[in-house]
Image (cartoon, rainbow, N blue to C red; front, side, top):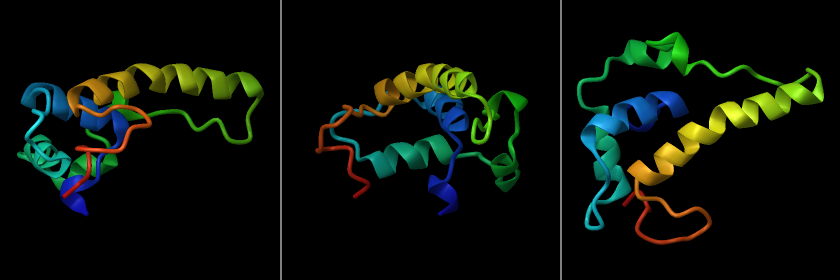
Amino acid sequence: MWPRAFTLRELVRCGGPVGRRSAEETLADWLARAHRGRQRSALLGESPDDDVADPIGGPQRWHGETARTLSGPVDQLVGSAGLAPGKPGPARLR
């Protein structure tokens, strides 16, 4: 699992420099490129910028703040990894 285990923000940070996934490239190959050079300590969070506050148990506004926090990174990941929300297809890991 290690080569495919990223926090959302870490994957956006690592995926940016490797560039957008080509139409011929599998998601697994793109993830492998994003993984190159990572250390296992990255799973503990190399950057405090990778942290996302957990809204569970807090007031409703915390859920909205978390959604806004994640919106940008999700959009970046969809663009970089060449994923189309809600559409099956070439994003499979194979």
